[in-house]
Length: 311
Length: 307
Image (cartoon, rainbow over all chains, first blue to last red; front, side):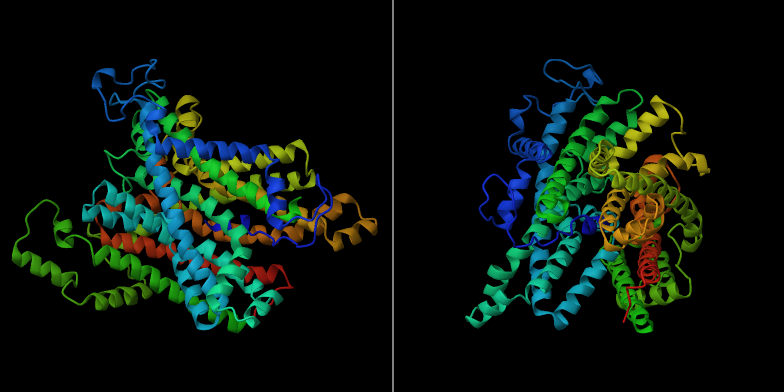
């Protein structure tokens, strides 16, 4: 996660209007960014993959008629058929159906953890930057401490406790959402904080205060919108990182456990017999890589669109 | 400078105490029965249990135990693993392979990431630049759980140029896992180098150097390069710490008997002293790397002054 900060520092777009474009009316920074964004094919590819993944998570039966849990040892490593387009794995389960049904947990955990991380980052980042003083000092030290625990390392130790507590499938999903969220909010909070510190000295903030706006209103209506662009970039990229982290933890045996469907679990199992047949390894790997890639590209293209220096 | 150093050291101590406390309490306060974990499947008689509890200091309050652990740590005493071996022995054995892995990763990052980044920045907008951008995006997007098994499949089984596992720990066997471990850093370094190089190429001093009539080679090789290296060196320093912690998957896949491998095995066997010891070492390396980078920053860039 350390590299996200350097990738995602977005320059605050200049307010002066830009020359050119199809109609030379003055545009807002967001409209400007949107104009840049919608011309990029890479952005639309990423949007398409994201949409497919989300639909797959919501309605997996649209993509495959087979049940991922219906396995028969008789068709161990059997070749592809019309019904199972990528064949069967070592337990005789449909490889494609397993990957399709694994989407739900990945997406659920990714979005859930990103939501938890986003809320925490926003609360702490905005208040720390706005109020400063002792509150800022405390928040900054807490961020230091959380950053001192690498995501994967801490995730393993935390999830090991959950395993010992003997939680069920849903309990593990909830635990993953909160653990990843609690460990992954720091970069976003730092970015919001520094952006708030620069915005709060602007004249229009002083004007709002003079007009009698309270702290809450100033933070929510006048300061937060300025920090939103870099925040969205970081959270989008973090979403990909959370999905990858879930797969990694499941791969290591401390994330989700069977009978839950997870790409990490599939990869970990298929690795044992990849000499015999590599398709059961390749399919969940491709699903995972494409999903994470889509979120990274999404974040990257949005960042470029908001950064006037790169135009 | 001195005041800054003191402040940074105090911050470091706080982070170290807090992180080890979190891991310590997770491993001890909520864990199962450590005595039973020690004995394995065998039954433990009450007298044995009482003796073991006293031996491991489990009869003392939790905070006292943590304090004892921390003061032991300061004297280099990591305590005893549940297997009876000294934790410091295990660490001394596990560190070299992990350091070698991280070193290979860093060398790959410098050799490949920085060079390609510079070429991409000089020929900005060309096909090489665009290909690099797409390539780095793909590498950043592929998680290591996909990359490591896939590389193992392709380069050790389909095209057997590397040994499948690196248990022996000789340098050639560590090459492939090292490169895999460094893949993400390579991609990030490429992007960082390109961005920093591009920015510096547009700066005033470059224009001055050019208008003085200096050759392009000298402008790029001396003036731009030196200034562009500052953020890259910081990145490398921070990455070194992160790489050592991130080696868990790579070491697991390639059977490298390093820190990550041992850490994971210790977690499986509920070996709390070993887990806490290994995590403490990783956190210390991470923090020290960060501190050195911060100080190096001031050395490399005289404009930066720490108050």
